[in-house]
Image 1 (cartoon, helix red, strand yellow):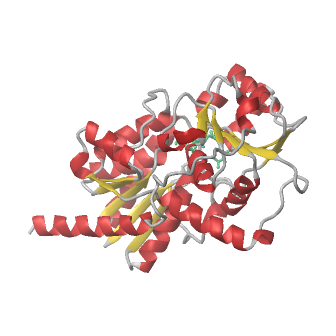
Image 2 (cartoon, helix red, strand yellow; image 1 turned 120 degrees about the vertical axis):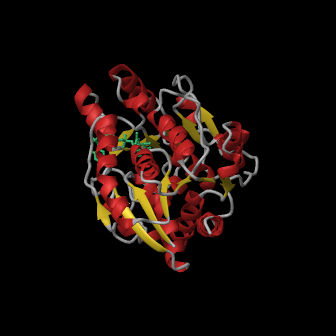
Length: 362
Ligand code: UD1
């Protein structure tokens, strides 16, 4: 069986890591296509090196652009690649423009598509990620869902027959890297924090938070109101917008740092008092690592993290100061994201569905 993965943005490289390792273990032929949506060293090649992902076989070098230009560039470039490779499966990941382009390019060429992290919904139609998820789920032949809630969303949209619950591959990588970090904490470069000092980790990158000058200024001021050091890990989109609007990302208790590698991030979360973010992945990683999160959005796709106050939504920035340093909830966390074996379930599902297809086509 030959699987062609289409990836392009940071969270997709993280999801690719356990999949690439599992495919290698199960001798599944794997072709990796990097669209080039994320191209900075700190957003891309560093993750391939740190997470020991094989180098991409094909790089499209599409780069940044408006949604139409970026997605269209990928679509045009993928046509030739997919026609030549003729994979048994095109595997697309998550909810970025690279996901939608991969799915659309494949269905147009009648190549079977599997969507990893299918069925997530924010029900917020302003988000580009929501369009990407919904369109990809409806285009794909196999929907690899991470949670029971995601399965329910797919069923509600008439997609139950194509859906299978595999668990969450980000849990595979997060728990694995957590164990490595705990086994050898000295291997991780230290943060600009004194020993024993309490700090909060913050990340902001969603268009709704970054692309309006007033909103972005309000978010940064809210982070400054937190009564402990705040390490702001600056995504390129945030850096570009802050420079454009003349907004300072440093000063007082706010300390800006470039994006961290994955192990550094896990270590930073483990050492923190809490997380303030608009990232989907980080909300879940904080939950898995047992740190309280404050999410600067009106909704979350990872609704399981809201249980017992592990994650609290604060879109209007009303309560950041008290929420950011609140104590860890007393309640034991459930395990809605699986047991860290999702990549193996993905490999089995792809193999089983391919066999079914071959039987049906005889
Ligand atoms: C994308 C995804 C989002 C995901 C996020 C993770 C879409 C619509 N959004 O958002 O779902 O959560 O990635 O990071 O696909 N830039 C650089 N260097 C880079 C990458 C980007 O400088 O390596 C800058 C460019 O100026 C670009 C901006 O960041 O215009 C935004 O990048 P883009 O890929 O459009 O979307 P993200 O905001 O990263």
